[in-house]
Amino acid sequence: MSPDSLGAASIRRTDSEIDCAMLERTLELAELGRPGARPNPVVGAVLALSDGTVLATGHHPRRGEAHAERFCLDDAPAVIPADATLYVSLEPCSHHGKQPPCTDLIIERDVRRVVYASGDANPDTAGIGPARLTSVGIEVRRGSRDIERRALQQNAGFHSVHLRGRPYVTAKWAMTPNGRFATGDRNRPWISGEESRAFVHYLRAGSGAIAVGIGTVLADDPLLTVRGPIADRIFTPPLRVVYDRALRLSLDSQLVRTSGEAPVLCCCLHDAPPLRELALRDAGVDVWRAPFPEPGASCPPAASLAMLAKRGVNDVLLECGPTMLKIFHDADLIDGIVAFVGSRDAPVDQPGLEFEHPLVRDALDTPGIPSGDDQRHVTLRHPIWELAGAIPD
Ligand code: AOF
Ligand code: ZN
Image (cartoon, rainbow, N blue to C red; front, side, top):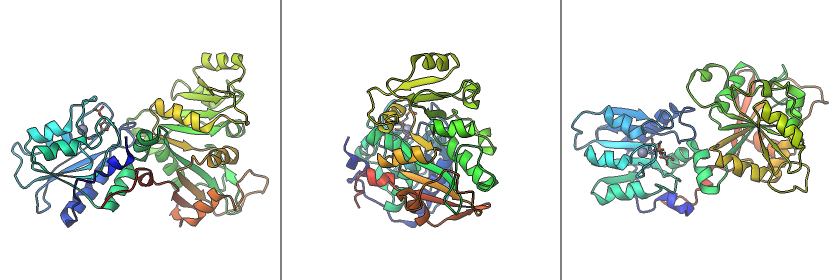
């Protein structure tokens, strides 16, 4: 598909204040679907009168369940007033997936006006829904560029997989003011307070996979599961991925011992020891071998990401140490950064990235937000709207 088709140039934008406010509300409602909707997009919907009176709301809670539009219209009055608008954070779908097309429902319920925030990169439906609604005389509008960007970024991983066949990759690390790292789950006591840890679990829950290098596993024996308040929601546990070129993952590691609770996948080199693969498989760990001999020392990051996309992973959270981060960075595969900077220096023999490394520079160029005892720096290196092509006016 052409990336520009996400822009749906033929659909006019609206700049009405009420329309903008209602679209903002759809973005908030969409968040209620995170992390349950994964790997589907999060979507919110509002039905409102032209004076802004909200008649009904809905969101897409989980893959396989009804879409946001259906939850919203099921909640609406039996006869929908002629001046009501249906607002949706994603263009209404027009295909048969696990659910019937939302366009059929919108037509059947006699909705006269639809305003949506962003296009859908799924080629089964991209651009078709708005065109169908227009063809039967329903007025269809898009929101502002700003809201379109935010709506696209809200489903960055979903659009990334459709647009470029690989997940959206966010690198997360915690560092001290003197540039040392705390990797894995057992962060050293001098970084990452409670609030930062809760945010990491929220990020994990929203990701289809959490990836680390074998060095981090050997050093920290992390669990890499979702814990804290977010864990009370219903969602598929993220896949725990270990970049383990020679399959050194210990059968006694916490990851292997908990492989029944949350899946584990080792990514190894083409010629990693077959007996280790058998032992890991016996212990419930999946193994992916690089499909071709790799001249360098690591598993090919781009090929592994394409494999993860095929397994339904839209978002990868890299919780690796400096070595793996550099490999992903050198292949230009890091789209976003979440860096926590603590307030106390650590011994300089801890691993770290040099301050002049572009990842650290990018992270620290973004103003920090207080996060408990730490500062949280959230940087979009490759916002998804840039990949979605020029957004037409
Ligand atoms: C919408 N509203 O709330 C969502 C949409 O398998 P299905 O039937 O659930 O279809 C999933 C696809 O539908 C998904 O890939 C995306 O293109 C779209 N999601 N569309 O109109 C929604 N969740
Ligand atoms: Zn739909």
